[in-house]
Image (tube, rainbow, N blue to C red; front, side, top):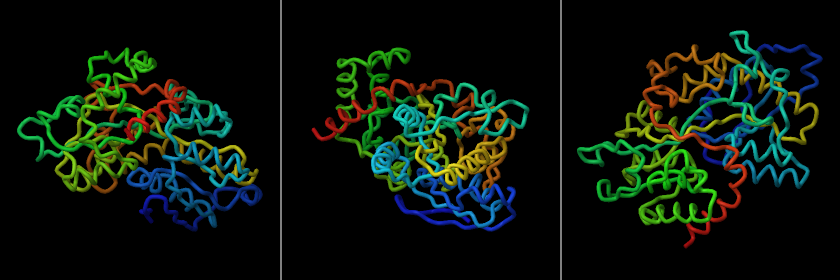
Length: 372
């Protein structure tokens, strides 16, 4: 069973199987969950790797998808204020997890107590290592935001570096960029001569922010702004843009699964983490079900299984050796991971704590700049 819904839609899934819990424990857990994610190829990989197997082992349990992760912070704030939290498990990027944790909207996790040990004998904390960037965040995957381009629209010289985004002379045409400051501001400074190690120090100043906006001004009239990860692959497929940013997994899907005339630019790919948070304010029964699901969904095998469906690196070290072939295409997946050495010669490391501190202010400035 796959889940393919329009953005914002929800679909209920009910699968019967054999329960792996005692009757007493099962009675203490809610029998339904609302799981929040991003839709598209990524959510489908979660559906295949985590949700279907979990429901098969838990008779009578239902799961409903809500594709609102892009609005998770605002919506959880509103739910908390109204005293009516309707989500059970929420997939968010690491910076949003930090914000939610700081605001008391996500529960703190005792990683070694609440999560499974690694299949290699490691504790959860040892297995996830430095990717445990917040006390409330349970990592699933390492992914990157990078740039795809139409191979038949870039002429004889395909782009090789991120600054092709700003090179309208060599690569005339429309671009697509995400409608938020993250990644765009960093790339603008990199392509305006700021050293990689200095980007966040510069961006912390008014002058640095002005510098980034000025660089973005040079292509503003040639940008389609996207809000859903599926937008850029569709715009590329339709020939409406020559290049654009999106998640590496979306581009993998377009290139390898759909055979679109698209190339991927790994230069200055921005590494990021995606994972689960559990909202505060759940009843005991809903919390028990959420914790049980998350423990299952983030064990060694499940994280490795996700790589059968999408080119995101598993967050557990013990999962990496288990990465094999794509479930349908039969191709080896390791070389398609953003973390593969051949793809990671020049990466940009996303600063979670910095964006957690500055996100609200820069969001407001960015939206004001767009409106100018």
